[in-house]
Image (cartoon, rainbow over all chains, first blue to last red; front, top):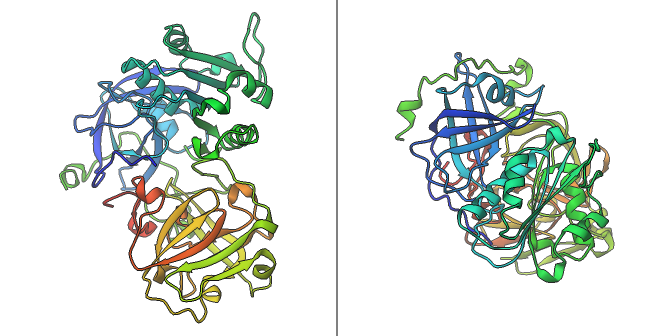
Length: 250
Length: 208
């Protein structure tokens, strides 16, 4: 079992927002300078804390999007209209503002890049975020570990990191990026246009004889479906690591 | 400590937040928010457990280990309890209703030198809880939620329920209790999460 990189107490510290990059109409990446950041592993998350002037506080967890090697800590946040924290992060927070955060958190849903097993990443919507940290990490360390990403989005406009994924997938270092769109078939689109199913996984996933390390992240029904299909196809349940998030929160 | 002073008085510019209604705010631990749905969080695929294969055991520091089949377990006296639950990922759900068997019933007459327990599940999940925190009307082994059989993604057919601790201690797909003299960190407790996990003291992670 993976051991945590986190030792000792996780203290609250300040990040200063340096840059905001809009990824899709609902999703933005926030790049923070965090002077006392202790470092993280690809796949970990942080807690964010907001404090109102009367002392009222709200906390949420967000996956880290940046690679461990990156100078700035990146969070990619989907704005939930009825949310409490995400509309503040994506909408109110401006460059130069400070944000309280602590982390990194979680020692299980992580990919260190030090094993030979092929890597299978399956993401739904903003579930791509911790997987992107893994792909960025893979790129930064020059890993040639064979990797496949199956990424499900609603429409083409909803595809987070679209250009960067295209770039990573074209690097010729053993990464294949496969998209599926569940609510749109754009003209000239050659990817899948349906929800993830067994036929798609048979075409994209490494067969279980290759013992891939599998990471699945997305909304609960998406993760339940993808992980259950993989188990039914004979993959070892212990090799499938999942992160689920509900429709509420944010 | 280096941050406590520095962060005191910090206000997130422009943040007001959604206020809790006053009736329930005293029931929500620090850093938590109330949800009305029931989020699912698990580290791996959802196991599908057939009840005719299912047993529940008490083992470890006990002279005669105990074991129940599904049928035997169903014949035990039940309790229906209504509890607030608090997940370390920040959501709390108020007034959840569960039916199952009190750990006190399962432990009746057991003499043990153990002070700690490991709750273990199908799929290899474990979590550690002090024995005093699962006895004395504090924990249940439950198989109904809201009057319905517990669904697999929520831990069905049977999960542990120890609602005064963060909800990862309420192991899904539970299969038994191991009584232990020493404390052994479980799955999340080995991965950065707190050994005890009291929501009211916000013991989320190591060192909290």
